[in-house]
Amino acid sequence: MPDTEKIRAAVFARAASGETLYAREAVLDVIDERSHDTVISTGQWATIRHLVDWIDRANGRTPHEVAMRILKITEENGEVATAHMAMPGQYSRADVADELCDVMLSAAVALVTVAGDTAEDLLAVQWADVRRDTRNFTTCFYEIVASIGRAARTYIGMTGQNPRKGVTHTREDVAAELCDVILAAAVALVLVTDGKAEQVLSAKLAKVAARAETVGA
Image (cartoon, rainbow, N blue to C red; front, side):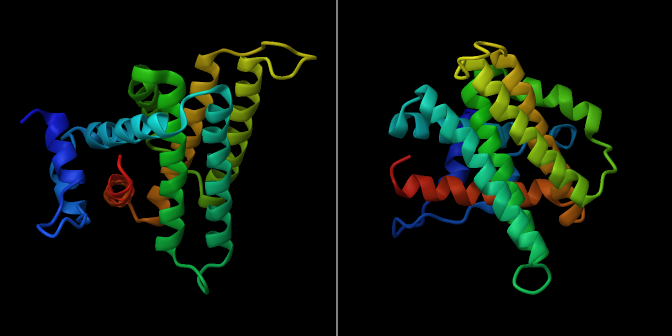
């Protein structure tokens, strides 16, 4: 079975009754062996690309839709702030980790949308520079906020939506800022999961993909 089919079979596994399984362990079995050298593994990228295809089929890929995918990152990061501020009472570290996964996945969807087949390589190059990052959680959160703002600004510049400034940025500029969002969120995820970021992200991605499958992904 080709790798992509193996991953898909794992993520979208179904029980005999037809109900979607929570396929965490199956996904972990097909993660690339070199995944510790990347922030998002090869297996995870395969699922993210499938989700992007599904969103494209449902919503198209107009400039407005792309803008909404970038705006979605802001929404998810707001939920990180809510969970973190309410710890340890109403929310837990696991809740914060879950919301950070949402930031990473929404940014990855936007990155694939903007950068296409180069998304994985672009992120891998930047990850090599920050994989031993020692920033604390608050600093990471502020960096996520700053990177989202820059991503939005560069997208406006790429599409020339500010009539006073016109076209000021490129698709590569937008992709670079989206990579920064993912990386800052990844460092924060490592902090709140005691180094188990890859497993937590894999489980979250499996859950999202399985949910998408139930509505026709």
